[in-house]
Length: 245
Image (cartoon, rainbow, N blue to C red; front, side, top):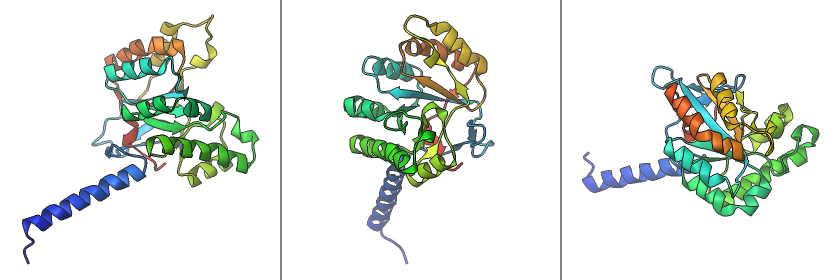
């Protein structure tokens, strides 16, 4: 039996709607095809199918924001290099900078969960851990309509209990494969060129790069992204990373 054109169009529209709805509810509002995953042991980003997706990519991440004085400069540098990133945010910064959170999201970047108070969760009971993660999930969802899907534990301190609580909250735990160590620098002692070179020297396929919203990191960013592109690295879109680990 032949289906008339009107019904075909209706079914196609319905299928597209359901696909987009599923993508949004799963933390992928851009409906980007997920062709990568994070290796749980190495914390590197690897292709689901090496035959169809490049392995020479890096993942850019920024912790502890958004910072009102610095965030726009980071976004502009990322736009210049056509790069997307995960911004792992804490509760007070989210609450005090709701428009910045929304702007990061609307510019095509991903919001990650970095706990509410940036405390060492391995020293806390499971109820506290669940609340630290859950409060960020709610705050981000209230602002963007999409819950975070990746969680970076403060101080990269994680154990099996924390990982289990994160999974129950719909979060995959992410640490890093390159620590920029920008957090060791201070206003009186910093070197943006050395910071960029440190990351470049450690660059490897699938690198998961941890940075912070800090003045010297912002100053280093354009040069860093230029160097990585000159080394023929691509910047992976976080939305193309599957939650399976």
